[in-house]
Image (cartoon, rainbow, N blue to C red; front, side, top):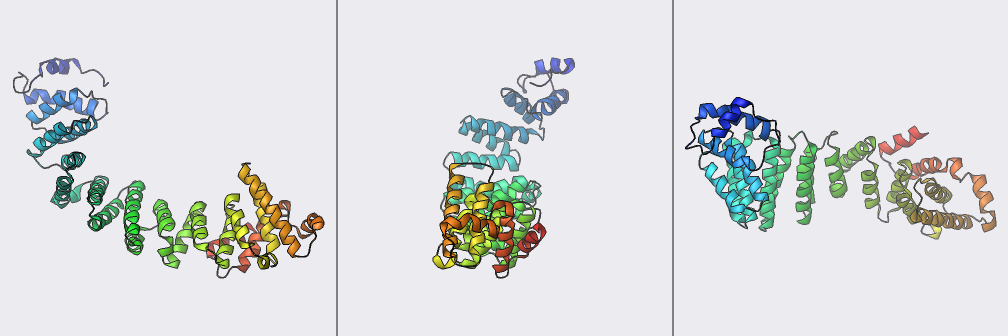
Length: 387
């Protein structure tokens, strides 16, 4: 509850019942109205039952703030399920003057009542209004997103794309990056479903900069294979600098497939970025899947690094134990392919420096890097820094 009305205002308030019959005129009522607006409404401490009274007086006195209060009251009515009352209130106020907030709210009421076509018409009219461009970008973005949602609900998928594009472009002007990320999520989903991933890249690429990590994550995760290689590497390097390793590893693992070079790149990056065992160990297993792969020069370091990763994982679990066990079996198999008897594996591993305490993870990363054709510069610099 707000603080109590000052005594002189409280006396007036007691006489401010029905505006048309009250002895209090608008000049006198202004102080009471201002107090409720500033001390109760703006502090979000106004009683729900006071809203109709305050709105009646504001309308009676032609207070410009009546549209703001009316919009808030209409939203309250919507939340109470009183859609017809909310619609009547919004339409009544809009008959007095245009207001963006009330037009938007009325469209949502119509949509909630199943009148989707009417809601779309209201929102299109709102977007086309000359004053729409003066709205805060957050509000304008939400209008575009709601219009796109209704178009999609109606099945007008292609009509939703330019609206979503407008939402993205408008959201780029918001201080809060989550607006742009939300708009980008919906745009990507829509275009990917329609086979338009390249169009999504074309729309979002100009908005990518070093401050928009959330947008980069979404583009790399969902559109990475459609990006120009230079742009993709730029984004990966940015993610590494920002410590967003999961995005980088997801992209590398997704693009690896069965390509030995891409698998080796993903494994090398996983070692350098200290990825958990559930990421690194499966990559090692894929690299060493064949007899010929286990005979290669790199095989002992790859297998040993996999075991060391599982050993060094702080969080112990059944999965971690499984990866460690599988890694040991894999290392024994590699040893066999290199002519080492099972009983001599420990001595061989000691001699070759294949244990965690020998720094085998870093050694494996450096060794594998040298086997990768044209590794990305961010990975080269990171491993060089690790020594």
